[in-house]
Image 1: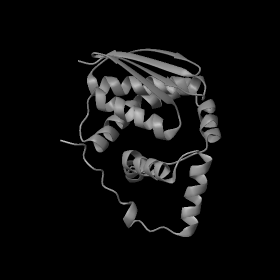
Image 2 (image 1 turned 90 degrees about the horizontal axis):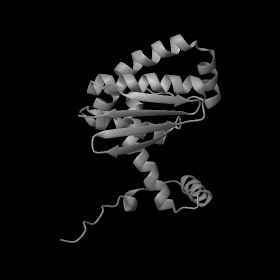
Image 3 (image 1 turned 90 degrees about the vertical axis):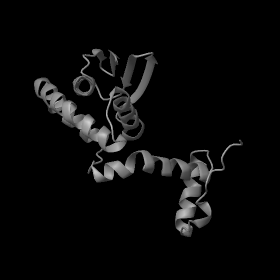
Image 4 (image 1 turned 180 degrees about the vertical axis):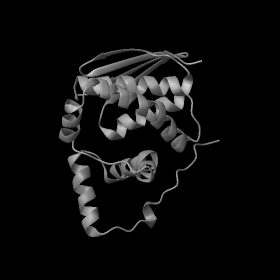
Length: 178
């Protein structure tokens, strides 16, 4: 059987000339087509925005976030990240995927990386052994937060005690999913 045809909504969308001009300009600036840009916008909505509008996430300037991290004491940062890590990722992953296990948790963290801009995420899986690298430019305080947040999420979801390493700009988490 041949490949299925993709449905198109392009013929039914009517946009203003101003929006059309904006999309064309942005597509040109990104060296892509208007269709590719529109597809990426719709994909972001489907994978991210529709959930996070409901969850009341906020956007903040990186400079503000960095300053907040710099003034919080390390012990408070660890306490906050551990408490939130034990609760939030599980709640959000269940909301998004309607189930929770280590793989959906990693999918959530990957989507978060893709759309939040707070870190880059690289996942390597060898069977049930996972190595996840979180790279960022926000310094040691953010590495500390991420380490404890993600460790608690993995412990809560999978009952797994991950091993981790951190540097000023990177957190490496290793665990065995069973």
